[in-house]
Image (tube, rainbow, N blue to C red; front, top):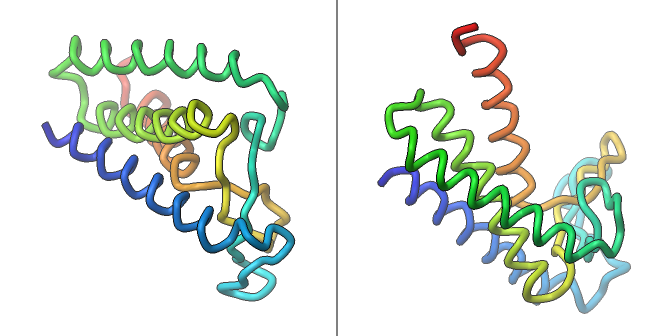
Amino acid sequence: MIYIILILCIIVLDQTAKYLASVYLKPTPSQTVPLIKGVFHLTYAENRGAAFSILQNKRTLFIVVTVMFIIFAVYYLLRHRNENILVKISLSMILSGAIGNLIDRMRFGYVVDFMDFRLINFPIFNIADCGVVIGSILLGYYLIFIAEK
């Protein structure tokens, strides 16, 4: 039950933030709102690709792959109820990010990005992306350091 709540919270937070970015940042797409000037800005972007905007305009491919991953992750979580808590949390975070970006792809044909970390010239991203990345790091940590070999 807690994993469903985690998934729903991340999806709601992601979709709410994207909505606010669309309302307040989209009207002036060339404008950026610095929260910490030169370090972290809010900048509206429409990503029609995957991470780092690779594979632009492959919407159908992304939807199919995402739906397949969602089915696999839900099946795994339901089938392995006694799995390590770190695995369940990491899969829940990855799943919520996948669903958040899938919603955008299905509704708009692109993913709304708005978090602009400029200190190292990083691509613009969103909360769903954070869920995928943090969940993947946690899963990697589990597989490398905790899982039985």
